[in-house]
Length: 403
Image (spheres, rainbow, N blue to C red):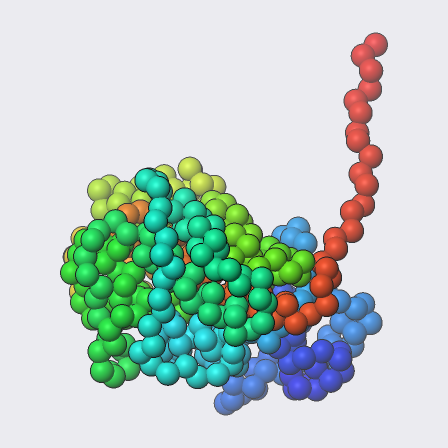
């Protein structure tokens, strides 16, 4: 058996890349009894070294792209941002602090506010449209948007995210205060504190605002999922950070990526009215899968959901919503052996808070913008134009002419 460090040396890659191979199924990690150290069979490592870069994806028939990154690793049912457990960050840091950790690898002082651009939007019904238009208009207020130095990109990112938060408003309530679970002093003016009253008409408890903050932290990055690949491709051709985010937004709009929590919100409402079995059956018939359940990267369950769902429970949600959510979880497990994922947690949170059914997508988008910016900063330091897929021409299949 080899340690992760020995595997990295044998393959000539970084330690984070070894964990990326694990998350994609190219290597199997074994746990040493009594410790959390991962060990790898030497013959598996040698086989990987002989065949070269792994091409097996985390989904059937997926095209696998391997990119070395120092940002996020997913291994052993854990998410780490620059080596730090994302769940610990979610419990002890503001979203702003977690974003700066992703962007710089350095600690950010508590309480520094992000100022928005002076953006005025036309009347738009959907939050998704407001976010897209916000980013485009915000870019016109940043004359130095083509300064791709890390400090300039971070300054633009702070203001961009703050502007996105301001323009998704469904209410005119004053910003709330955020109190973290760590028990520190109340922190006013945070992204989570400003976002809550713009999505929910309900007066929040400190626990629920802390849950929103934790969701923003946990969803900030998830390695190289589809929208992040698009963002990195845009950064590779030296698009400015606003255009990088637009590239990510174009992918996240797909119903299979950012909008799954909307389906969970609807399923929860159905479960309250008709019970969990009928709600799950209807969702399965409509979608072909259970929204909010299952995550191939986490055989033992999505660690983000494992943190967020108990936080929502602890905030004393209405009995009908609590019962419906946990009946859905229990029923899905009995029939499909699937555990809830982060999308379920977002749908549960938006239902408890009486947010619009699309609020989970809005939270996801604002959070993931921080990750796209982190990947853009990393990609700007790489040689440009390095993404070039190869096509294999497929001859059209013509049917035989009628006789």
